[in-house]
Figure 1 (cartoon, rainbow, N blue to C red):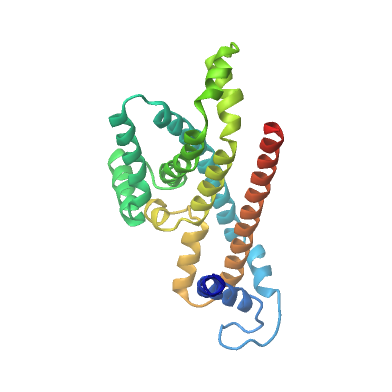
Figure 2 (cartoon, rainbow, N blue to C red):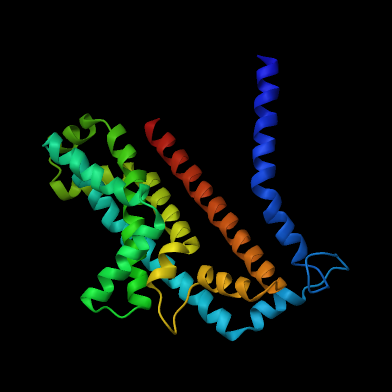
Length: 266
């Protein structure tokens, strides 16, 4: 057992090194005085200052955050309703069909999804830009929310609902005072996952964005093609830090919710 424990930890260490070494390498050179990633000549904040002094880049950051927030909020609302519909639909055939349709967008390659939306928007006549990006992000975030919320619904005991109805609770009371509080951790998980996916998405956004509108992922890709610039390192480092803050925020909220649920059980 002791040998297996050591081997498992060694394996995890190797995996984390492979995953995070390139990121920390990028962050390390974001403080380089030189304008390349070959020789580290000293520490500087120059590249971070350039990021914040770039007005166009700040507008793109704002666009990205607005898209991510709107997409995550709307997809969370739709996803919760979708999860409720899948959970309480009576027909097993309909339930399996809905689950299959929900999982298609998750397993489908992003390139196919992006190309499909591009064709759809072209046929319908929707101008590529803010609206097309927002609709696309909502579409691929909804299945993620459903997947995060559905397990919480499935583990909820039906006796809770029966007890609430026996005490005279209406359908709205059962939903708002029993079901939604119980699945709150799943809702928060779905929201943060949707926000992260929307914030980081490149493939789908690349297809549906238009002239005059861009997101950070597309902008970083465009700048990287023009040549090595440590401004990209600085911007990517800030995005990585923001992602860590999001993850920590999610775990803090989830921990508090678990404590509240634990006190309620007592």
